[in-house]
Image (cartoon, rainbow over all chains, first blue to last red; front, side, top):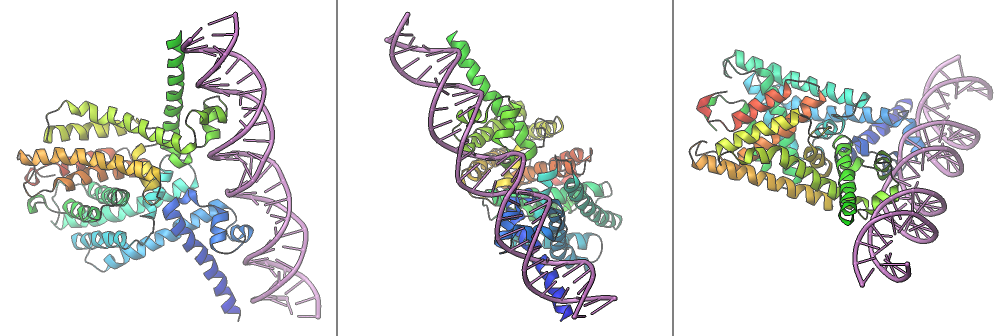
Length: 203
Length: 203
DNA sequence: AGATATACAGCACGATCGTTCGTATTGTAA
DNA sequence: TTACAATACGAACGATCGTGCTGTATATCT
């Protein structure tokens, strides 16, 4: 019985974080309130915050869990593809798929967090920045591999490719969601494929 | 003297809106607080809110004024360029310039507002969506002109170009600001130029 | 000059914010 | 059985939220 209880506790904490992810993907990480989250989880404010210490620790836990969710949805399916261009293409597909599937009910969580903290200092800013830097580094490494293999133009900067993909995915999904345009993700996908295509392959 | 006073009032209202723009570009449109804004303007909460009616009306006024500021910085300088590709290139340059010049102290205001309201219904959502739709329509019209003039590939969808430019500018500037990478705007500019370049011109 | 409208300060309101208590319950370890 | 740590509750804290109401000073108009 000992095991069961421990698992229950862990699951309960995880459940709180998962609920908070969904809430924060809509309202923002700063839009989380202990009261609302506690109500949604049918528990007291003090009981909820007690697990994390304070609100900031909760936000950091939520961010970490959301990154995990993103990694599962985008990186993991693509990791089995060959390094370089094939993997980049797999990432693009998985990326668009995860946006279309509403893995985060309010749009990409990292994008929301990025905008929230891009001009506000603090631990949360640093955490989000670290996450984005790491993701850009992954994309850049794949782009470099692709270029070295001749799958991208030799004069193409891998860091350019990385930022371009990231900007398109986050900007495209936000705009599409905002103006409620179902074609936006298709356009975004085409643009991302263009970004990793050889110029001579055309649009 | 009558004129003077009326102008003072208008200027006072405008000053409130301008201060709110700067505040909201950092903290978000939802992060505006009557109390903080009033303190910053050295006036009472009731005196401030009295000019607008309620907070939502203030937010809408702030959004409208921010759009004006964006238009002044990006559209107006480019409007004198020839329609089509030249104007698109001028827009890209002005766009990047305005991001580099920190026209909005906390990053592009419309981007912040887009992310805030992309998953939240209400009048603010509708206002922001209208603004973005209008801007995308402008970009699309220029792209169509460019394509019809042979400055873009015939099989290139003008709406694709519009969304691509918009996504790159908003996504690129957010990421660059977040990870504090001074080269990000250069990369974004290259990507935007790539988006309106003929494939054969290369990277 | 007197009437009227407006702008704003001051104050209070109910609500909610994050946080901190004290306490009761529970599972784990000695 | 006893001691301990974790969990969660209810209640309350001071602070701040947006928004009313009221009095007053000033500006505009007749």
